[in-house]
Amino acid sequence: MTSPTVYKVSMTERAMQEATFLILTALADGSQHGYGIIAEVQEISGGRVRLRAGTLYTALDRLRADGLIEMDREEIVEGRLRRYYRLTPEGTGRLAAEAARLQANATAALTRLKPSAVVT
Amino acid sequence: MLACYPKAFRRESEDEILAVLLATAGEGQRRVGLAESADLIRGAVRMHFGMSRSPRPVRNAVRLMCFGAVLTLAVLVTVLVTLGGVRWGAAHDLNAGQWPTVILTQVGPWLASALVCAGVWLWLAWANGRGYHWARPAFVAFFALLTTVLFFGLGEFTGANALPYTLPDVIAATVLWLVAVVAALLIFSETANPYYQQEPAQQ
Image (cartoon, rainbow over all chains, first blue to last red; front, side, top):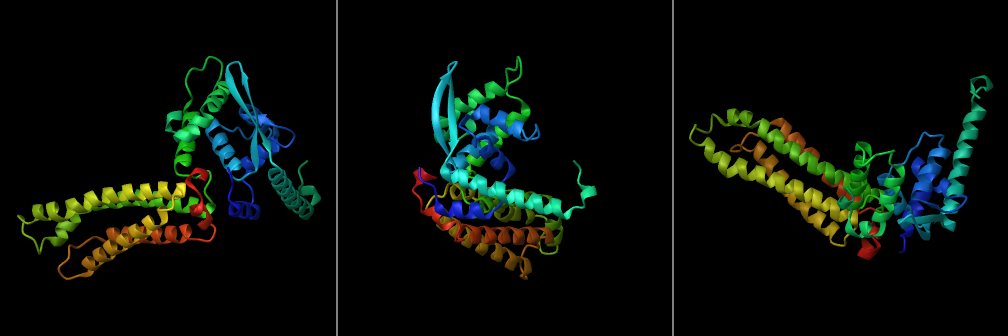
């Protein structure tokens, strides 16, 4: 399945949604299956974000169409299908760019705050 | 619940989603919870309207078209609610015997066409969300028809021999037309163009 270039261009120009960012982050250190992604996202967000199945698979469908993730492999575990997803090189680049953007924003915010106002 | 999803998506992901639902289910849980159900339905609607794959302008146009459907139904309700006002306004032109004729020949067909119009809004939202080649020309044709009908209606509103539509009717009709204008601009935007040039299989 090919993905339209125009979307990629428009995506790089826009801030990534948090759920998308967290899903890509969950896949950053290796492939994961659906439930694994949900668990990882919950852990990464400190329990704040709990993806539901409908949201997850809509996001995965979109990310696959955009060429940011791809299927890695399939397994049958206890009679149930497990499909593993991994980042594509483009997905890795996109995640790195978004992480850098967020870090730059956070750094700018922290340097402008008075030290006393920063809660540690 | 998964039956709500498009067939192609279900064929590819149904087992996987079921596995995730089972994995996330609580101890002894036998049915999908309310929040999970709502999320699945929301996901299915997004899939049907191509909201997960279409570019942003098309997604926004689809939202506007859905809003157009809702607004059309709201106009329909408005007309029903203000029918008394219309009758009162027309009282000086119509005698008691003429009112049922007006209902049958003008108001009734208008209400029926408003229902059809709401359906067409939704159909066009679906087709544009999927990026079908014919979706944009179809929307243009609908827009032309809508414009003609609305301006004809507004002409009647200001004409000497017209049924006196109430101000809310006119405001709603104008908003509806503006929604159609913005949706048309969005689906013909530069970012949206390539989406309509893909093969259906890619959408």
